Length: 289
Figure 1 (cartoon, rainbow, N blue to C red):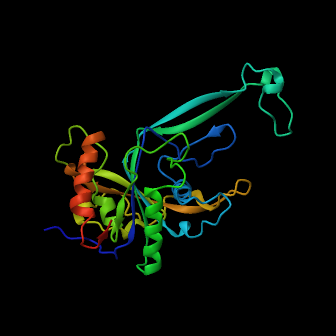
Figure 2 (cartoon, rainbow, N blue to C red):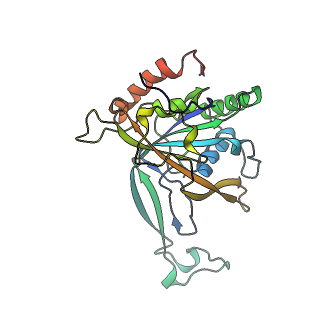
């Protein structure tokens, strides 16, 4: 019989499936260079939630930034660079306007832009609140309702990246437990049948709060108790002319997940997800739909 090495208090939250042909979670995007992080950012996820709730860009988001974000990298995807040209072949009066309000001369009228995407990536995420009380429960209900019937279309970091399949998997009073155990959108590595495989988790706080069993702990990876770096993706406002972010720590941790949890792609993973939601997540034992 396996035992947990740590038994942190359960946290209520939402479980999200972030999958689509393309995703783009900008970190340092500036003018013609539009980058992407290798995983969903806080600014992208909170912005998506604000969009679902119908918040305008200048409206407060303090309630949304209280949510903790933990991401499981099911499938990292492949970095894709898309080259755009803007203004090429147009008469001078129709080219892109400069910062000074002038028009570019003919030899500089064509602008090159590079946009980066994650192609064929899949992530599972938990948005949680550490304290159980009526106010937090009502807030999570509000967010879940908005994700089921969003005010504006949802996207995975950029408007050209719509999500594929179900985005909201459900609510739970122990969301981090299910984040670990939900079927993965990935195939097991070739030649490693029946072997546990490391899967990376990323969060905005120490990952020692994950409800981990002994068999999942890798002896060669960090335990996620210390930040690996900082990201400037904590949104303070999405105001169109005063958009502001601040830095926050990034924590990483790899857990060994069993071969049987890798459910493959497409309908195979959706079928496994459906079975798990019916028999594990949406049950009366402390979970909520």
